[in-house]
Image (cartoon, rainbow, N blue to C red; front, side, top):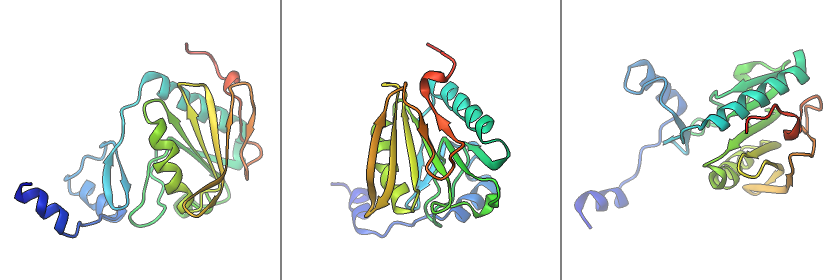
Length: 191
């Protein structure tokens, strides 16, 4: 083992906060368009999106906005501050429009959706644990490869007690935002 590897094993790592990251962006140290998320104080590079992933994200966001109207806010690819050192960028998050944007966190976000094509395992494990830990009540993973929606509810002990996989023909309704529903089969075809 070389000296650098030993130093990494024996030294305390610095954990960034979202405020640190924002200051790095303001100073030009980190590009504002960098595809990173803040997970446990570490900047983690996000996977590139394929065209199917981007198209599906757009269609779902449009559907949620149309169904929810003025009662919900649908946010795409924007940082969600869960804690000072946890600030993921979910594909979509939806919340009650009566809440202020700056006050949204894991406990009051209405729904988080991750579209998974190359990141299925990460979204079903790491992201699910993260969102459960911070009290996200309704977390959906849209698996592009199988045309299914895996719904996670009832967060407890760093995981979800209720996880159900729905087919493209099933309609899924958001837990606390009843106007927000998704049936993959109703989306315009791309394939």
